[in-house]
Image (cartoon, rainbow, N blue to C red; front, side, top):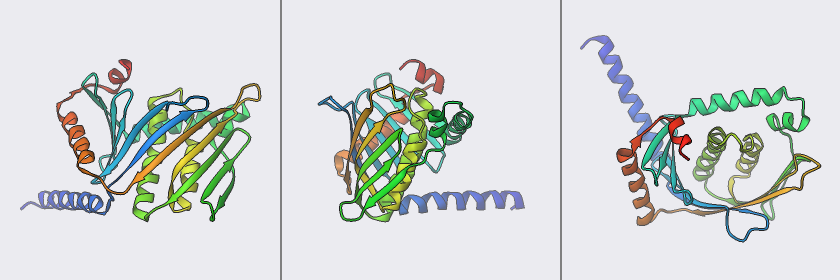
Length: 252
């Protein structure tokens, strides 16, 4: 066997082995999510995030959409249920966009905008109540942390960081992800995940504070209905029409 073919075969073998090992070490669990804006009794958005075999499936109720985070292949797959469309964006493209924005914010004349690129908080954590607070004049987070096993905490932290950046890349009008990523890091240090987060935003003294609450229910085991949802999403990946990311976003 030629040396180059032997080396290629070895690289493929070790690559596949690494993916299988990573999937085997991943925990299967889900988190039910709901986001509330102050003054509204109904959630602004709801969904469920399912972690299964090394992949993360984020199901949004309205509009009906599934986002699949595939760390091993460095991509997000977007599935529009209503239009039967599929698209992808690479982790590298997400990272490049976020880095460009960070660079622009770092040179901004407005100190509040500049702060968003490199935020700093006064942090406190109570080991008795598991309450975490990150406080600043512009943004304050108050989180109720739930302890869990390390494999779940680390997977959820990694996904939360990448999803914050992804959400900013696909929704440019959303807030930069850097403050939220600092909260994720603080939660990870507490060895848990957040089951409730209260966010207060006051970027300008002239504006009233924006107050948002997110609630997250951790479920440590998947049932048959959860696995069926994952199987359905995989079928969507195979059957939906593939379009460019720009085409996908233009129709929404």
